[in-house]
Image 1 (tube, helix red, strand yellow):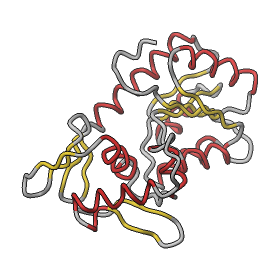
Image 2: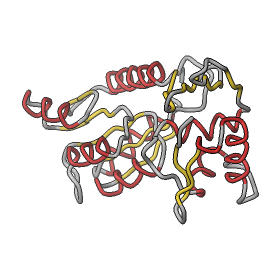
Image 3: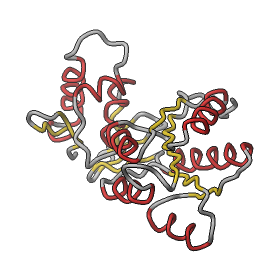
Image 4: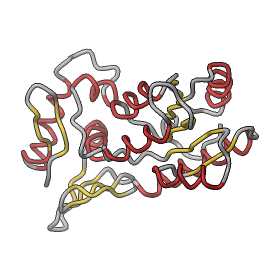
Length: 226
């Protein structure tokens, strides 16, 4: 692919119970450079959407275990703002309105052209990148491109790559409590030591104050405040 920038592959969650279609789409999308996870039902899609970070979601409307619209509503109610493309055979105007009202960012009716799907996904990913260039952290800001935190005083604090990645993971989903295992998987995949997350939480607190990362006893960490 062809994603037009030097970053890790876009992470995509495909939620569809049509295994043949899901396998075909995942193969095409992986060839285009996406890292794809597949969920065969709405309940699994909800679990993955809440526990992992994605750049874009593709969700079928009619799903077993949990309907696509219910899945969207639950993700949005948990502050998951990942762009969602609703992919479905239900293409009437009121169906599209229902999907957009439930939290979808785009809607593509089956049958569809692969080129159009690819173009819509690229547009959603670009939009997400634009809107997350600066993330608010309480009274401060996280500047993604510069890997800096701007304090309320205007002071700029530079972060090392892993410090930034950890803070970004927390700040991109501020209402979620992240387990150590989840943060290690997202940020420190190759690190052998299980204490690596705690070490970098310490580094962030040393640079930005103890309140920047909250410890949730027995569960893990969540974003605090500056």
